[in-house]
Length: 108
Image (cartoon, rainbow, N blue to C red; front, side, top):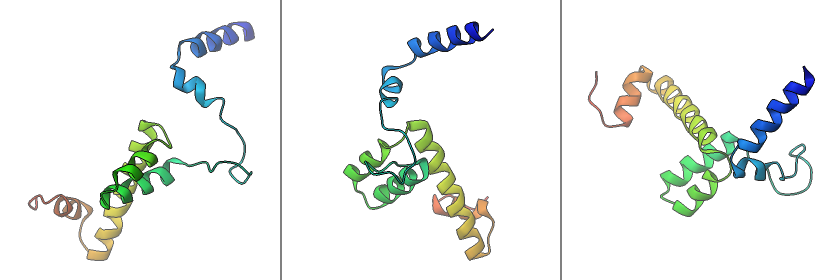
């Protein structure tokens, strides 16, 4: 059984994109070790959104490269949800009305 699992893993590794394989060569270990700073998806999302808000394309491009596009998308979505919830509480409105007003949409 273990041999079959090893075969499946080996076959999967041979078929995956080159950039995934390249990521395996990056240093591994806790973020507190010396070396280049490691970014998580929330670091990337916060920097990306802040850079976009400030119209700083080079900075947003850099932040977009810190994580996969899927991870960045998740982080941006999570940031948007948290921001809408915080504004809704601050304004004493529903998250739906806050989200619509931020996008310039009429009240539903």
